[in-house]
Length: 329
Ligand code: SF4
Image (tube, rainbow, N blue to C red; front, top):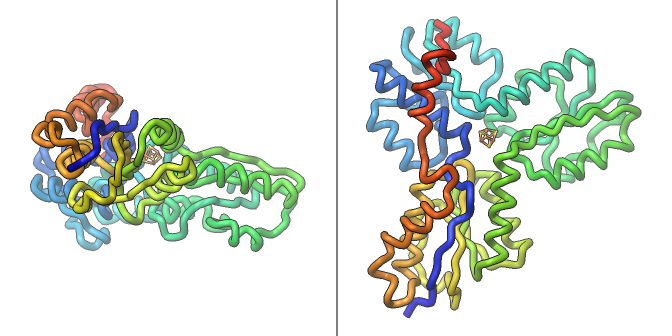
């Protein structure tokens, strides 16, 4: 017999606005009859990729796989200036879905290069956002875990900047470390506020439940950080990719209240699916048969904005005065 009486979902979950808008740009382009591609997976979520494929949107790994005149969507992570230029040279219609926050990072990096700082970039090597950022500052010193930091040289003027989804505590720790490495240290805090809010909401939820379920890609850094934070809060936690990963009620032990949260690339529909699965698998007798209804209530109660995986209505409005989709053919 199951013990779970309540499943709570963290506030402000679902896609972050950057991911949501890049996906919407692709859908709008396809709906307009364009031959539409995304450069790399717009989000690492099989369900979303299948949905896009069903709308005729193809994922490609290289611009060489796109025919002249076709549309190519740049995902929220952004790309290097060279990739943008090559796409234009090839006669592709570039639909720039780079998140506005990432665009800000790119501009800040270019400014630091102009100002001749020795730049330290906190980021995960080979992450697409980081690859794109390095295109704006090829000489930046990229560091990730603390073991890397020893190779940072001492320079007179240094600047610190971050990949958007790095944990704030790590950024602050590196800033403190760099103080003794230079005469002048410029700190440009580009940790994304969405990431910070999500971590806070997850910690708040972890405080009031018996067990946490974190939903997101196995390799997603921001998802792993949520799992780490739940552990720090002293809460038992399990990380999964989607509801299908929940097969054993034993995971829930004697838990009565279960919390569910997700990374910035996890659609809110997946969180609802997980809540439903928890009720079905480990809910008390009276609740299992009402799993779908209870899961819907859980997600609509907290999602902000309420149950939304698209901005398409808003984008269509925006198109009239400030076209969000830029052609670069
Ligand atoms: S996590 Fe932040 S920076 Fe990254 S895509 Fe989402 S909103 Fe943009």
